[in-house]
Structures are given as C-alpha cells and as structure tokens.
Image (cartoon, rainbow, N blue to C red; front, side, top):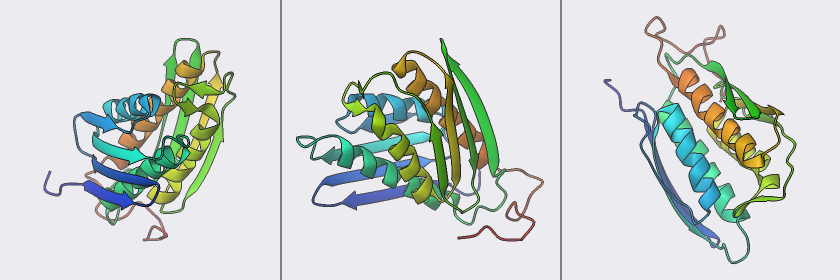
Length: 199
C-alpha cells in the first residue's frame, strides 16, 4: 500500500476529551477506552470485523451520563473516517452486510457518497446495555454518518436479545465499511458518473 489511509482526530471540550486513530487498511487491532464498557465492546467488534486498526481514548462527564462521551467518540470516529478516505478516489464506495447473532439479524448498507444521511430501524426491549442507553444507539450511528459524510442505513430485522441486536449491527457496520472503503484496482478516479463526490 503506497498511501497510508489513516485518520487522526483530537477533540477537547468542557464535556469530553477524545482522541481517535483509524487505519483503514489494518488487521482488526483495537485499543478502545471510553469509560463506557458496552461502547468499548461494540467499537472493538466494529474494528475486528472491518479489519480496521482503531485506537480510541476518551474521558468525559460520565458523572452526568454517557451521552456526551459516546456522542463525541462517534463524531471523532466519523471525522477520522472522512480524513482517512481523502479524495475517495478508487474506492468501491457502496457495500452492505447481513450479520446474524444467534436469534438476531442485523443489516447495514453504506454509500461513501460525501452526502451524509442516516436511517436506523431497531426495536429495543430494554432501556440499557450496561452503561449505554439503547435509545442512544441510533444517535451514535447518525453522528458517525454525518461526520464521516456517508449514507448509512441500518436495521435489526428481528431479534429478542438487545446485546445480540446491537452486536449484529456493529459487526455489520464494520463489514459494510470494509467493503465500501476497499480500493478497486480498476478504478483510478472517484466512483461517480458525475466525476465528483459531493462535499
């Protein structure tokens, strides 16, 4: 690989202090410490199944709740993805993945179009997964997609266990992005009939 496709983002506010490093052409190595155990677990799965090398270090106002920290981590992850993609020349651009997790089935489709949009369809059966509220998961996907400038559609097609449902979604997210970010040797420019990906 001649070009190292990597994004490094630092974000510090009165609420959080976040550092993210994302290497697209990695081997699935993850070091994640956000103070939110379930989010650490999900981001590790995302990296392992996407074959991304991911480093996340975050501290935040968890004495209030997990919202600011989790949100800012996903904002930084999206910015790191956008930075790593650069001009997006030669990428496959669109991909999708179905991932089963026991009784649950998750689906994610992405388009690295430069246009942010996010749709998440999931029915949760509990209010929390460890320290992470299930109502926050859709917002985290949205924050990632808008900062990463891509279309993200995610759905839990069916399931009963919320841990399994979330795990299926994050694994599918990693696998779909792995497919979409790959370089196609047949393509030398951006993958668009317009000749440009809208910023």
